[in-house]
Structures are given as C-alpha cells and as structure tokens.
Image (cartoon, rainbow, N blue to C red):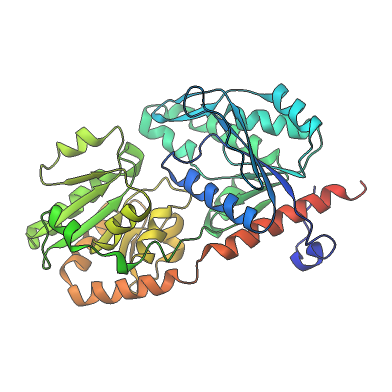
Length: 399
C-alpha cells in the first residue's frame, strides 16, 4: 500500500466520517511509562475528533473487566510480566481470537502500539483480513539489550523489529532524526508524528515551596532534577556524577530523582544525599518538575523522551545528549545545552555551566517554556487522524 504525499487530497472524500479504530497495546494507564501516557492521550484525542476506539490490551489485574464508555470499548486478553520490566505486562498471542473478533465486527483500521506477542498476533490477524495497519515505533528494544546482558541479541531484535514494522502500511515515529536512522536500516513507509505536551498541566506556575522544603531546599538551593525509570539504559550514574561535580563548586545543590526501577538501591549507594521521590503522575508530577531549577537527562536509548518536553513546558533549562527529543527541541544556548552523543565529559560540563550561572539558567528556563507552547496535543491528534484516513482510503481503492 502506498501513501500519497498530499494530505489535503486524501482528506476530501470522507473527512467527516468517523473511523472505527482498533488500537492494540501491551501497556496502558495506570502503567507509568511514555508509551502508555502518550497512547492514552492520542486515543482521547481521536475520540474527541469523533472516532470510535476499540482497545485491545492485556488484563492488568486478575478478574479485570472492561468498562464501557462513550466511543470506547475494550477487549482484554491474557498477559505475563515483561522480563526486566516486572511492573509491566506483555500480551499473550491471540491471533485466532482477534481474527474472530474482527470478522464479526470489522474495524476500519488497526493501530498497533507495541511489538510484543499481542502486537504480532494483531499484525497477522489484520493482514489475513486485509485491514489497513499502522504501527508505532516507540521503544528502542535493540538498544536496551546491551544494558541487560543480552547485547548479543541486538541483531536478532533489530531484524524482528524491521520485519514487524515493515509488515504494516505505515510506521509512525516521533522525530525526523529517528525517521532517517530507521530508513537507513531498511525500515519502510515511515511517517513523523511528533509528541505533544499539556502546557496547562506542566507549567512553571506549579512551583511549590513546600515541596522544595521537603527536599531540604530553600529559595537559594539549586535543585537538579531527573525524571526517569531507574534502570541501566537511562544512564543515571552520569547524572549523579554531573551533580556531584556541580556540588563540588556549589555545595547547596540537591539532586531529585523522580521514578523507580531496578537500579534504585544501586543508585542510592552512590550518594546518600540523593532525594528519591518515587513514581509521580498528574498534578503531583507537574509540581515536581516546576519546583526544580535545572533538568538533566543522560539517556541514549529513547525514541523520543517525553520527559524532555515536560521539563521544557515546566520552565526548566535542559541538559541532554543530542539525541531523540532533545536533539530536535533544544536550541543550543537558548533553552538548554545538548552534549555530543556519548561525550560524558561534555554532559558534565554543561550541567556545571548552567548550574553555576543563575541568570543564564533562568533565561533558558523562560525560553524553554516558550519553546513548548507550540507543541500542544491538538496538532498531534489531527496528524494521526490524517495518516489513518489516508491508509483507510488507500485500502478502499481498487487494486
């Protein structure tokens, strides 16, 4: 199936007709991760545009039942904990069940958000039924492999991911940089769909002196923040090293880590003064961002990195690598500093540089907020809808 480049032409025939969209995912709120959060927002946005969502996901608790809502229904399947991500589950294979469901009530399009056994089953079932298929490339599983002692599987994982996504009619990726990287590796039919941010929720206005006091910080204390799963692939030891180097120059400096994961104990052993805030969400998470002074994110395994965008919206200057969202959203010297990929010394220098220069950091924070205001979710919803309509209309044309 070929997507024509003209969105306006493709929209004309059936732009007002609601679509019935089957969305298949292994993760969904209340799971706390970028995939679940982003997908939930996009589903809500598509519903607001009038589309009917049919969500297929694993049960998150024994005996869980679907809750019917307007323009939203669920099919729940069996699942198992994901190795190395015990708080998340992967769906068990369900090709026959999905085929029966979609024969009985045919969706207009199948959108597959994750590449696990459930996602593979959905791909095969949709292909058999000649349904248009879109997928998301949201997680660098091949890059994660080296952090969990299975780096020797990197090639096999990449081969699987390419076969999976090339089996769809379109794969949505969050940045033009990732689109180019994947195209060079042989991925086909890639479309850029950026991520959005709720600038009402993530805002400097949510700064909370009481929360800062709980961290042991006063008005003059510099608070360095990182929001991340506490896991090897997030490179948090470098964030801690950068904070310690800054603390040598500016002793009244705190490091707050928001999130949890398998590395918490190991990271706590590196320095007893680290503030571990645990998982946070919603208004509480927004307060944590806004109550900090500088954001540092050292991961090189993200496909996007929602936390970068949330930090910018919260008015924080950002130090990160020239990778994923940061590589496209950080304007060097304006709203933060980006270090060359894998240059840990440059990363540490950038944290020290912004940490010691209050006026520059505050100016970068104001610019960060302004740079996020153009990234509201409404444009992302419309872009997703346009791509799905193109696929549905292309599938309806005579061969």
